[in-house]
Length: 114
Image 1 (cartoon, rainbow, N blue to C red):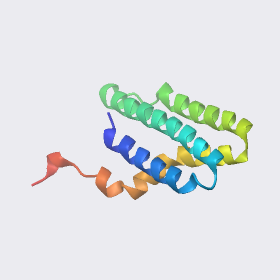
Image 2: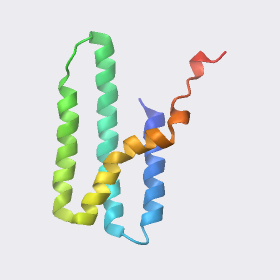
Image 3: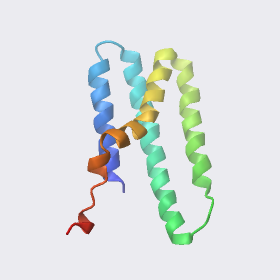
Image 4: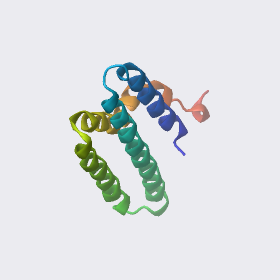
């Protein structure tokens, strides 16, 4: 279930953690926290897309649930400080960043090769 995307997100988070750990330890914890929310949101989105394809409905509750989870993550992160909040925001944006960086690898489809 979306293993390639999760792997790409984890690789990006690990690189950010390795680069930032010597300088800003609080932001590194925020990146881990935000990446966890990002992975959870991605899995919920994959589940919703499969549900859309099977049932054909136009609106699902999962859309609101994903953004509610992101809001909870950002809302709780602000209590731990500005650097933790910035790291959490970066962790949540890791999904979009990993799609841009690893887009070619993620877009490969082995079933349509000639």
